[in-house]
Amino acid sequence: MHRLFAASRPAFRAATLTRVPRRSLAAVTSDLQTPSSRLTPPPITVRRNLKFTNPLLSYRQNYPPLDNADYIRFNPTADPSFANPNQVAQFLSSVQAHFDTLPSDPHAPATTARFRQYSRAFVLPFEDKPRVYWAPGHAQEGRDITYYNQGVFNPEHESERRAMPSIPDSMRSELLEKLILTDVALCDWSVDELRHPIIVGVHFIKTAPTQEHPVSKTTPNSLHQDGHKFSFVHLVQRRNAIGGENVIAGKGGRYAGLQPSEVPSEDVLARFYLESPLDSWAAYDAKCSHYAGPVMQEVVGPEPSERSVIICDIEPMVAAVCPI
Image (cartoon, rainbow, N blue to C red; front, side, top):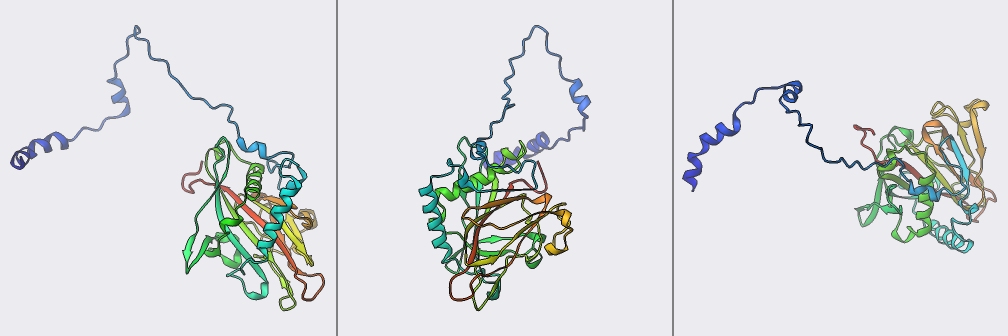
């Protein structure tokens, strides 16, 4: 059998390696026969989805969307369909207790009194019933960590791949996931983006000043853009704290890197504080820059102080080299 195969090699090469002359598309199509008029072509079935239904719209309720806005403010509990008061109370109690044990930010000096966890999730907006899928973290020295990199959008950690402690499975509750889906629903999506997965970075961040470290800062400590298409901030708790003012400046990223005092008053879109649990605001990243001020103790002493938030940064999953 081996000898027969070896003997047939020249014929095989001749049959497979014969050069085919290059031909133009016009030359190829001119060889095609015109079908007889007596032949009836089979019917062509085209699956058209002219009226694409966005299942996420049911999560919008009466909240203001980001469609035509630089930023929005809302509190999801204002709509009773989000959750009943008992569910909200249980959720906040669980999250606030967890924030009491939040690990310190491994990339911040102790003087900043900042604590955080981070995980990444995905939403498939084209599902009939959208849900949240959590990405696995990385095992590092017996801990579960998730990497986070803001590229050039955080001058304090430029293009730094930071390992953050992951949010534990026990905190990935139904109401947290509903909050995430609500955020995704309020974003401004194109019909193409709604046909791709959506990435959600979920941050648990607490700024907690003490007598020893009286000023707790966020990063970067200036007006900035996050580098994600949309960013949402939800207050978890504010106690014995002053400061933490939110400032939003218009004209895209013109004022990124500056302090709010350096922005002309006519370009300051808003200044406000998040006061009540789940008070929220969101930014359309390309349209504005934003800032969260340092937090100090209202009553200096041993009583705990904090401003804690859940941040969701949201963007479509598309290839950078082949944008949709």
